[in-house]
Length: 112
Image 1 (cartoon, rainbow, N blue to C red):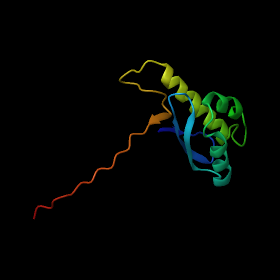
Image 2: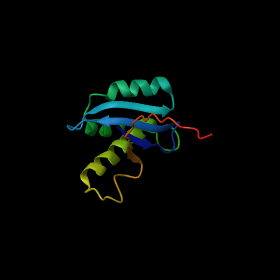
Image 3: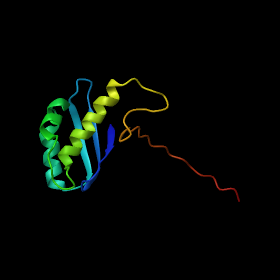
Image 4: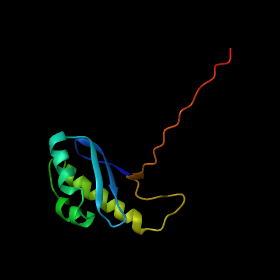
């Protein structure tokens, strides 16, 4: 899963997954208009990211951008991060973060 911090929209973050063939497999927005963003997810999941970028780029809502436009920017940044060689110090695009989530159970022992 990838994470992208949006700029200028009601949604704050986009979490998405792209398979090895460049197909969008999962999409979630944090914040924003729930109904419209659920529709956007349903209409884009299963489509090639190049097609999504072409359709969503340049859509304006407020602040000269929109949630679909930010999705296009997220996917463009994702593509660039995959094309550029990985530098161990600087990985990927600054707005696209790889999410490696693991749950750890820790018991704290109290010394009395």
